[in-house]
Each structure stands twice: as C-alpha cells, then as structure tokens.
Amino acid sequence: MPLDRSRLADGLTGLFEGTGGYPASDADAGRRWAEIYRTYAGRAAAGPTSPSDGSLENAEARLARALAAAFTTAKAPDAGIGTLTPLVDAAFVAFWLGRPPEVSAVAFTTPPPPDPPAPPPPTFAGMVTAATAGVLSPGLSDMLTAPGAMSATAAQQARSVATVLDAWTRTAVRVVNTPVSPPGPPQDPVALT
Image (cartoon, rainbow, N blue to C red; front, side, top):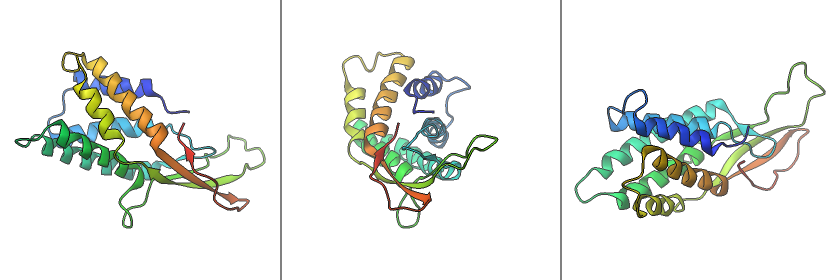
C-alpha cells in the first residue's frame, strides 16, 4: 500500500468543497486536515516496515493541534501566507518527528504475516529519524501565490496542496529500520514510498 497522492487530493477536495460541511472552527479545520493526512501517511512503507497505528494516532493529534494554532495565528492582523506556511511546515515536521525528548517520532513495524502464516519473515522496528524542516513552507508559498491560485477551483487547489505534501513526504521523511528477529544493526535511512 504505497502513499497515494490522488487519495490525499480527494480528501482535501472534500474538505475544501465542504463535503460533510465546512469546518466550524480552526480546531475543527486542524482536526480534519490531520485526519486526511494521517489516512494518507498510514499507507506509507519504509522498506519492510509501515507506520504503527498507535504512533499515527498520536501524530494525528499533534498535527491537529499544531494546524489549528497555525490557522488561528494566520488570522492575526499583518499575518498571512508568510506567517502561515512556516507554521504549517513545523506542524508536519512535528507529525513525523514528535517533540523530542517528551514525544517520540512515528514508529514503524513489520506488518504481520498473512493467515495462515508461512515461516515467520524477518521482523523490523523502525523510527522516523528525519523530516526536513523549511522545505514544505516554500513549496506551499509558491503554490499559494502562483498566478491563478486565487481563482482555482477547490479540486485544483486540493491537487496542488496534495502534490506539495506528497513530494515533501516522499523526499524529506526518512526512517531507520533495525532488524529485530533475527537481530542486527540499524540499516541505512530509507525514504517513504
């Protein structure tokens, strides 16, 4: 189950078009954005591992709070895209990396074998070790200030945002997997697919 930019765009399109109603508050908007991104991130693979559900639930809650705060801050006088995009960048970095040392990064595990299990495959435990900051913000700024951005349809805007988020997720987020059974040394960092 690889990352799927089209499904991310579909989720954002529904949000932007008000499917199921528009968010009632910044907190609601943050929650809905986080839910859409978590669903997208849940399909990620990092070599032999994928994100653990519990870890993604915590990451979703962090992202929802951070995006709600970003949306609220961007409404302040003299605020705007230059205020919003760095906060959004930081929110998505925190989704993957947590806030060390109190909150750990998204954990990855080897998916369980199918039933009936064949001989057990090697198992791995992984952890996000990088989610590059400062890359998402310029991409979002360029997309939001591009000619025609303000007149684009909700679906066009959603596809643009999904393209930026997908490219960042695939290139900026790295996971280090460590063999658990049989045990072994940590492997080289891998990108998400």
